[in-house]
Image 1 (cartoon, rainbow, N blue to C red):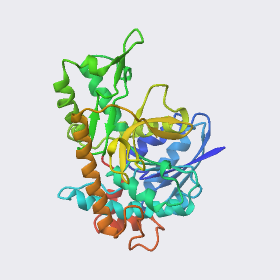
Image 2 (image 1 turned 45 degrees about the vertical axis):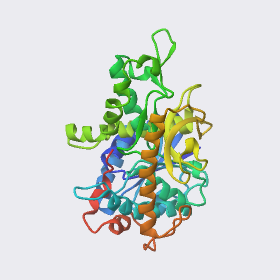
Image 3 (image 1 turned 90 degrees about the vertical axis):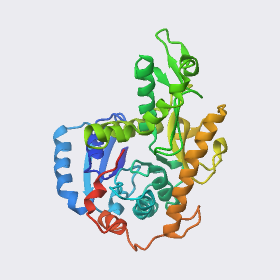
Image 4 (image 1 turned 180 degrees about the vertical axis):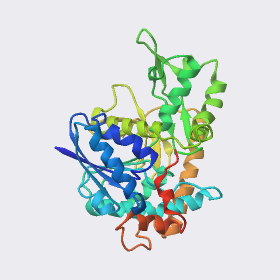
Length: 370
């Protein structure tokens, strides 16, 4: 069986870092992979060079590479779709303007998915604002189950593990079950204490609430803000947004979700459609929760006991997501559960999507700031 994987924004930095992980077997093992690379027309030439490189790498799993500016071609019978391309926030742009620009793009992405993708397609949204972009896409793709969509909060999950490991002086992968709650934004709540633990050198699981018992001031303040602002810190240091870590987190999220599942007793953070009102969070939004994965499906881990501090943090990020949803609905005049078509009559090219989102240079579509 050949897995058809479509990637939007494929010529950008994240796409470039992600392609070897898709093609090498890192995500899907030995299964054959056919790539569909989606970009604006102005980037097709660059993408042709990337296709040449993929051929030159001689990846054993890669069977074909299709480059296109038409989402109906890219998504046709696709099994996995990774939406990296979006409109990044530029200097002077209000968050509401960013949301509405991306709503136009992801409304058409969702309609294209609904029209031509496999009925069991799995969709991971990376482009920011990822949660609301995911909500727009999944509500437009009414033929596809909402459980088949996810927005990337696993990058924040990995960032949180790294900060805790550095604080405790232990290997990063010894840190388990941190949770990112809510939005992939500065309102997110990185939570080390509700479920997290560290596997010590003897293989014993030691709760982070015990290890950080005398350091809760850090866990409830500096730790949270450092994870919330990690993407900004990378931009300040590197001069560019996160690409390597975003690509790796995207690959790992897909691998755990669709292939390996989570290990017994472990969770990962995934931003998923909240149709059950988990943990008292308003239903109808895409919210990051602690999730277990089995047989290609995610399940929110329920029953965690949250402190009043944690509940307050969930309320803050929930409120931001409700505001984002309202901004998207204001543009397209829809109910929460039925996002209608916007003014574009076709989604024949990503160029038209970017043009609809802004009258400025379409090259901004290539970048998704993480």
